[in-house]
Amino acid sequence: MLSILIPTYNYDIRKLVNDLHNQANALGIDFEIVVMEDGSQKYLCENKTVGNLTFVKYHALSENIGRASIRNRLADSAIYSCLLFLDCDVEICRSNFLECYLKLFHENCVISGGRIYENKVEKQYSLIAKYGKTHEQFTDKNLKIRKKYTVLTTPNFLIDKNIFKKVRFDETIKQYGHEDTVFGIELQRQNIDIMMIDNPVCHIGLDDNTAFLKKTELALQTLLNIYKSGNYPELQQISKILSFYLKIKKLHLNKIISLNYKTFKPLITKNLTSKNPSMLLFDFYKLGFLTKL
Image (cartoon, rainbow, N blue to C red):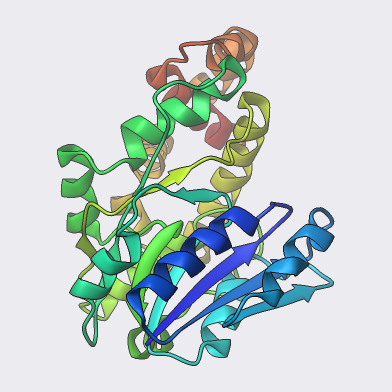
């Protein structure tokens, strides 16, 4: 009935797997939990122990194959038609988490439960926490955008295997970022809707501010490369920052933005690594980085 698929990279997944295992057993359903290490170097000995649980399969890949490829491989290995993808650095925060999904599952469905962030986090994690709360949690504003453009994030979603076979993740995307955006575009092209529900996981594996800025830069590079490939012109509608960058470029203002970015980057970075980072400055940081590219 249910295949729970967890791509894992350098994270201790024992609590997550045990919580899921307990819920699935309590429901009395046919299930499997598949953990696949994507070239991890840490927690291998600890994580290996989850393979001792019934209906849990543990695999460790020696090399990192990327966020798109690892998800495709997990889906290919699944024995059931109901696929639940979960990131490794999340925590199950509701005792009826699996039950809530299974009540809504049907053929040809895609369901996203979303994710939440703790209200209080330490200063070094302030940027990802504030960004997550304002852009990723299911607010009325965010849901409107996600439904309009079929935007999907991959930390917590359920999908019928037949749908997954039609769409799959684009394995040409090797660098970090936006494999989920492209996946959403493919769903849109197939006229497949995403049901957004209140069934979140809690994102606990937070990057510190400096690391999150680096990941943001990598994701922006990936975004621009994907757009330039010409395969996904829909990105211009979906990504506000890309849309604004293209307008700036068309007006020949990119050099002015780039100069200001270079001049004020130290001050902007100081704000973004502070206790209360500005999302407006974060947008300018991303726009400036794009113009530099």
